[in-house]
Figure 1 (tube, rainbow, N blue to C red):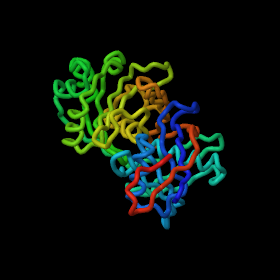
Figure 2: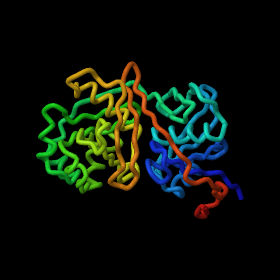
Figure 3: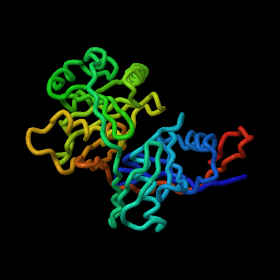
Length: 300
């Protein structure tokens, strides 16, 4: 029976059991898509990154949620490269990674901070209707209308599209009671992977905003800390002119506190969109992977 090394790496945090846990399978070159999907379902974190060789980049990553393959995952990219750096498998410096949205640059700093460059941003304003959106999020629609004139709802993407929903105050965002089927329908209608609700009313004084991300359509009811959505939100903020003064050189997005997984994402929006942060390994073990024709449940 084949066994594979698997890790849980907590991204966008320096503390174990915080941030966003990603599965990492560092040697996955001979696993089929079906086996990858089964491993991701067994690990049952929001995404698992499978590290593969690439002819066009330093390495390839494939990402699977517990229910399906996804094109790109920010926190799993950060987690995989942080693990490889901690293992001594890669040196600090610039790296390239092949993904289903193209080849992206990843910078590993000597202190362990990993930053990834995301795709060119796309921002498309959409008219959802605040009553419907409020019902889906379980937030008073007035808390959305209050900021809607200056910060419209939009679908933004730097590789994975999210529906951006500004909220006026943290008390409304924190008390959200999402209707997951309704959110899935909304996201599907607008070609988005999920809904990213945020407020500038953050917990920490040096944080730019506080966010929550809901992606039930890809098997993630609430994602603790979401790199792809953070990059898309950074691009959205520039597109809609969210800051009266000069656009910040770097922003800090906080997320995950209301699911007991606090994390922090560094977001830079310039000629390119980059997101980054730290990561720490919380679990390192082996998983039994049955042969292709064996339908037995995977054993940890």
